[in-house]
Image 1 (cartoon, rainbow, N blue to C red):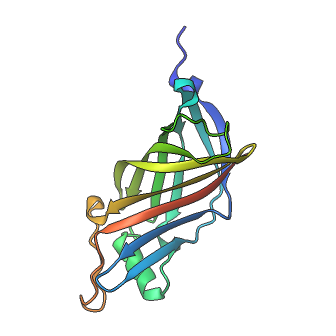
Image 2 (cartoon, rainbow, N blue to C red):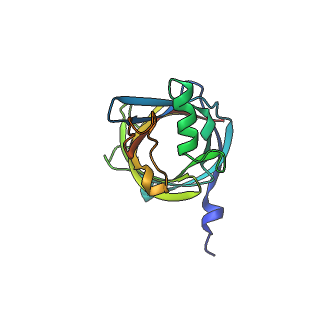
Length: 189
């Protein structure tokens, strides 16, 4: 009898530890800026299944919800512009959903103390538009049940039907490319 994918998935609960960071980097025709996520994440339930002798993991129910209003860009005007750009009034959350991760170095995370290079597939939803993207991630097992992941992904605001802001009556032009950076410490509970 064949086992369905749902039955083969192992349930886990995890927390994103307080020391984790999620932020966006961008630039204008004048300077660069950084918007730090101020959200404290709660406990999430997820399911995961190992494939290819532990070289690949398939995930289910791994959605991080990030309130559009919880980014601090350094001043109130920039914060307001960011919420407006992200259409935060209509779409209050950005969603990042991990779909799968494959280890590309041949090393298995947890079997060595080194960082392991991985290729992850994630779905990013901003302003109601969902895009599936590939991103390079490094992962490391810190201790039993604790992991550290780092990665970043350049996105184009126009891919999400967003218009970069142009504050100060158009004198400052925000570039279309924003880099999303993840520095997450995860604990399985």
